[in-house]
Image (cartoon, rainbow, N blue to C red):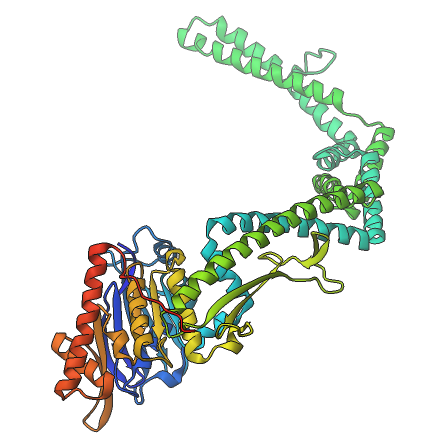
Length: 601
């Protein structure tokens, strides 16, 4: 099941008080008399797609307008990923509810799956789900970038793969070009910066600081400066533990006293007293170790003024580094490592610049080859697309018209920073290649091809756009297509052909069409009507689904305003019968009934 917009609810938008639109997964048509509010349906879809919300659209006397949509079949699609990333929660049946409100003070709010989200999330969802084609949207066909995109969509992977590789190589080419230009332009500045870094590294290397050395030197300097006091304290502690060095019996120290205690308890006749002897022995061992450590400490004390002077001199060297490069020695070492890395990117020697220039030239050659491949592929695709669109126009009351698509390289202007030599010619290397694409319309055989915006009327532009959509239907990733009066300026047989093509399009997409032509409406799977009436002195519009009999009445009105005559009803029933018969044949054959085309000489 493809994703579809199953339902849309509109509240207080323009003339619509409150309405719920149940949309068919195939072809839904919306009709109604002029001024009834059909445009508000498209406006609602625009709002639901994250379009600009205008306070003037809010129904008079109401605080805000609300549009709510329910999408089905999103599981496993990119749209579902967008919703999940936004924190949205699907309904129990798997559908996703989106909501947009616009208040009279201009504030706009959006919700997806019960979660308040930025309006941009609705726009991201719409890119995956809905494409609205109104009269203003036809202007997109006038943009060269859009026309180039039409060719790329039509060609599919044949162009997409080359374009992906082209963009990747182009990014590398731009990066190398920027680096080469930067190094060349800033050669003197970079050379000075590199010289400063090298001088700093030489200074640090000469001092050769070690990690944590500054902290160790502080402790050592303190010991050297206080050596006499420390020696006195350690000597006194040693005497107290081990006794006098000359063995004076009057100063035995703690070890001598504990030895005497051992002898006294060991010679006692009382077992309880003798039990204390091992504990005294342990104390003697512990004091012996302490005495040895005190002796070692005394031996390590250095009161030589020359050593202290050396330590202070070393501290001065390290402080000179920390004043310049970092707060401590470890920071200085970090600066040195960073400087080495930075120096590798500041090489402005002829060798380094030569390597960059060679790399740029190699990438330019590769990029030029890819650009030429893109141009060739687009030229082939343009011819095929032009033929397919021309064939579609044959059944849209444009029998004598044809479409041409021009693909030509875009020359680089003087001093163009994106100039790329392709086939010996300097071209502008844009993100999508070097091609300018233009859609041309030939009004009749022998006529001069003109840009479509000059050679086509508003109605013809609508039909050209519809023909392109039909041709591109198999490549369009958006499942729901909305057309707002795409049949403007046409009638008769052309209107029937538009209906046929929209019905054909609905076999691969959900199609929603706002129309004033009965010939188009007859091909729909579901017919909605916008009714306008006065209730309690207030003008209101509603949207409802027509049953078969109501549909005949509406089509008769659309044909000639003859909803109450037998002739009008008969014509409407005949039109419905033809449309239903053709759709039935399509289902049986798996393809639309072939359209007869003829060209008049």
